[in-house]
Length: 521
Image (tube, rainbow, N blue to C red):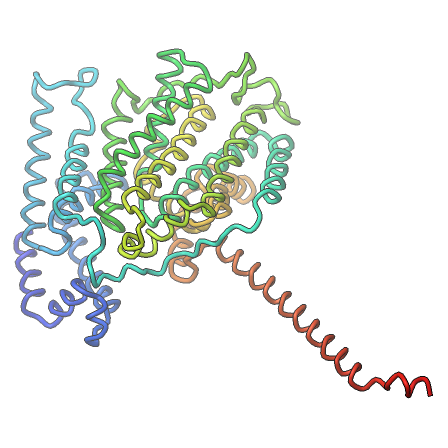
């Protein structure tokens, strides 16, 4: 590793390629004026980094568990070292990586001692991941900045955020169609539709934090899991009835999301994604797998009851087929989804929504115009955390239990991918993403009718994500909105042309008409 670091240091210090890379990194606009291509330099560095990552993967394979979960997540402590280096210094990254590895080993050694606190006789889980998150917080406060640096290209190719024209009519039609489907559909499709609605609610939180503010957060699904586990403790341990148990769990998880958001105010973009990924992994390992809070076996969630009426999946009303889950619980999920969807859509019209878009477009310009950038970010984290937490409580009611395996960091990355495919800036995009998410309506229909399993659906989703980011960053919902606007503009142009032709013909007729005395004669 030290040899690779020395070789890279020589490459970037004494070669023309290294000079071009450093120039593009310091100031992309000046590099463009000097005749360099930042995109070409970025592509070359991406290929070089892939080669080095493959080499280090070969070296790490004998000492690290090689599977589809453990090995990819080794990137999180590596990203902590990169944060300390500011993604620029090779020797700081090398030194920080060695020290982080030493600290992880020390923490593991201490956890095996007899005096160290245990979890039902076993070592406390998630301590190494919690250490990485704390180190990232320290790194971002040391290396982060309140605003982007001068010369940085802050105006990226961002998906459009169109202003919603009408809200009531499409909301009423969609609600009526979904309510009818919950009654008519068979039990398995009814369950898949309920899962789709819960997935759409989680994606609504991404619409706020990423679509409106441009902050890439990976911890939304972890906040949903936190709310689900807290709901179980409030309902079964403290015997708090519905809806107060769900509201309390949502508020507690929201406070956790705001705390994590405050700790990430000095970073943005990729750095923020790194920090929130570490936060999600720390919550997954330190909270969800801890038997005193959750555990891999899961915890029980009691069904919601209001004034003695069961509103859970096992309610008396079972739809046309007479099987569970009950459409009553689907109506509950549908009402929450519609209410939150209308709120997110209307948020785009408010002053807070306009300030969010200003921060997303250019933080320095927004601050110069008097926008409180920190306050807008904290508000966005609060709103998005509340929405994600509400989805977590509905998830617990839906399955009657909450398990750590459903709220992993890798699952969160997949959900973000579906959000981008559907359209991460629009409520309709959240609905599309919810229909495509895991165990939702579209994957279930593909499995039921064509035998296409979920793994193939995820592969197709990954390919679709790459195509969407390159060819159509607005997603499916954004493309549909553009087509509707184009059709409306074409119809308006035809109408205006017809009116102009009629006005021209009327004017010509008036000019050639005979005078009244001639008509009388």
